[in-house]
Amino acid sequence: MPEATWSEPGSISYLQNEHAKSLYSAGEYAEAKTIWQGLAEYGNLESINNLGVYYREGKAVPADYEKVVIYWQQAAEKNFTPSLMNLAGLYEEGFPGHPSDLRKAFETYVLAARAGDEKGAFKAANMVFRGEGVVANFADGHRLLTLAADLGNPAAFMMMGKYDELGFNPDGDILSARDWYEKAQYMGHPMAADALAALPKPDINYVYGLMQQKRHSDARRLAAELCRNDLDAQACNIQGQYDLSGASGVYRDYLSAAHALDYACAMKIADSCLNYAHAVAEGAQYGPGKFSTADYRKAEQAYARACNEQQDYTACAGVIYFNYYSAFGLNDRQKIMDYGPRACMNGGNDFACDVWMPMFNANVAETYGRNPGGSSSGSRFGNFLGNTLGTIVAGLAAGAQAYNNNSAGYSSTYSTSSSSGSSSSSSSNMRDFNQYMNSVRSIGTAYSAPCPPTNSYCR
Image 1 (tube, rainbow, N blue to C red):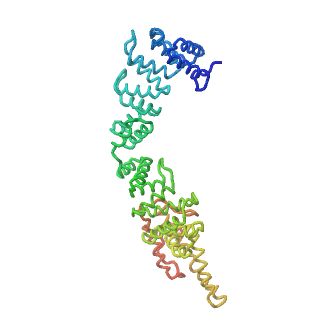
Image 2 (cartoon, helix red, strand yellow):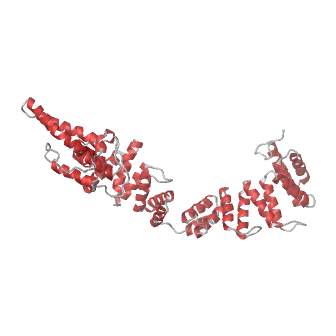
Image 3 (cartoon, rainbow, N blue to C red):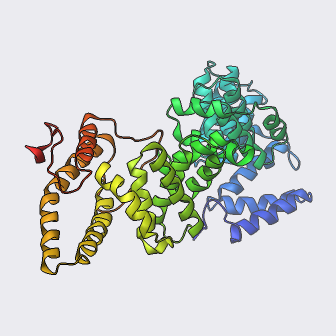
């Protein structure tokens, strides 16, 4: 049985073809021809192509273009790209009795391109750009050039980059031009390094432009580059927000977000410290062990500042979160007691309430249980709870409703979201809730603050 029509390296037909080429190079043309003819009888396309070369070069016998075309067409019909390229070149140059036929040459180059020949695609693209054998058309030429680039042609990389740099390609820009030049440089193109050096350097304003165009993947990539190479704090902040929240084409990476936002925070970029804390908090849930105790402490401190300075009740809950779970190594009970009322009562945060309320009740029970008077102390504590539980529940409901109207809300676990500003209580519901808090400063009094009409708990 004959082997594959394309000679695989190491196969018998491959070795025989290589031996025949060595004989041909040594001037032993007849011996080479004999081997190729034998392989051609079994349909070996490389040998058929080489017979065409044999008759075109005319080293052993006078050139015979009729046989050349016959052999190359035979292999070309099987999409053997060397024969397709040889035929296209023959049609382009012309041969005895046949003037140059650019139309036929173009069509054959296209066939070679479709068969996977990168040089054929590049040649066809340039013919379209120049209007040789076909009507000049930039869009058609660019499609063929893209095919050549996809097939790995370094010259195509350079042309794609130049068209993007000059604005001829409506979908290209400086970033895509740089990508093409970098590919050309990797492939060893001698002009790629100079082309890269001559490109204008994109800055943070370019990042903002990409964001406005919703080209989030490109915006994140450039921001990360500016952050890494230029230590641009704004770029670090943008990269961190992308890595924290994700976007179309951008996947969340909490560790990367924390690193970028940490630098932005040190450079005092607005909201970057709070977002750093969010990144550590979220990352700790999805990737335990990625952060250190120092990271947790720094995040907790950022939450504490936002809670104290901005009345950000989400941040208040963050302080509780980092001090509640022992894995973080902080475990400051007093901070839970200090920040719990704001996170739970003002913010209506379920997680904060679940943590702080039992601790608060335990403190109250312990305090009243130590008073003298035997059973009367228990009675006083029972009366105390009876007078206050209803007001606390109603207040929590009002606070939770106000909180839900102003933030993303909480489940039974702590969660965060990227911040672009403070999240203080500004709605009418929260104002009503604050009135409630003022009216019960002396715990045990009746609920007397105006109840928001939308709160079903107060009707």
